[in-house]
Length: 395
Image (tube, rainbow, N blue to C red; front, side):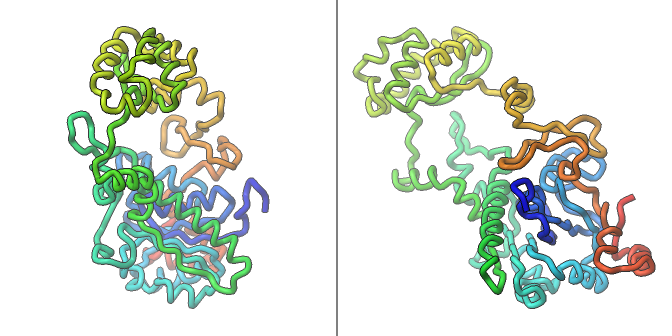
């Protein structure tokens, strides 16, 4: 065990698909666990088909599976189920993401798996949770953005609710679940039995939005407007996000834009003063900020230490000198992708490096034969599984 691989020696069986479950399992792999990704022989993990396909991967499946080993099994067959049971033997963590009831019908519910491995940490990730009237409904990130209030809160100036294009609820659920698994692994040292960890996109989405959710509820359901000059403003050649919270920041901002008089105006002196006069203040600020380019305003705001940033595209962000200097992003090669890919380095771990297995996501069934060998199957048995289509080995 080390800081670089604190979970080394742990065995994780991951039969989840999509993003939330696989990304949680990916984090366990990055911290040293041996994660065996079990996926269908025909389609594989369905995230492999979302968006532009590179070989048998997409921008969804690569970051959610780097550092794992893949075995493709037909879990509808008796042989496939027997192989999964063999893999569960000695496992520390089991992760599944089926709708409630489906995993039990497959024969791998919590009671069955914990009966075989009493100390296993069994993780169930679903859309709406395992109980309640919506528990059996299928759900993905956009559904929970709508259900949890995120879309209603994310209204543009046109007043229309908008979906956030990033999969914020999937990702937050994965990270919260990783935290729950990590702490359970720590607690299990003193426990004779494992436990069932239930996670849902609904829980993850609610936790992600707790500040906005609580504030909106306590304010009677009508979110308070952002107090000017905190917001997004058009410049002569782009956009700036400006944040002013404390009194000294307002004074500094007024000096930066060449309007120190605004800082002394009785309608604008404090946050409480500015709130009812936000439209009138923006009528002054918006035309003014459109008179100069982003770089000029950024230089002035930086000089006066006002929080702000130009709005970057993802490509512009990746090309920022600070991003390069800080080592936030690793650029690595990946099979089937014809150019280096940006992979954010993970907090608390060494940076990804070219050629590392932890920086590459496996193809569907890439490690099937090797995993079967490790679990005691000989060449004749493996050949039979391959011939019958119980197992698929990537070419």
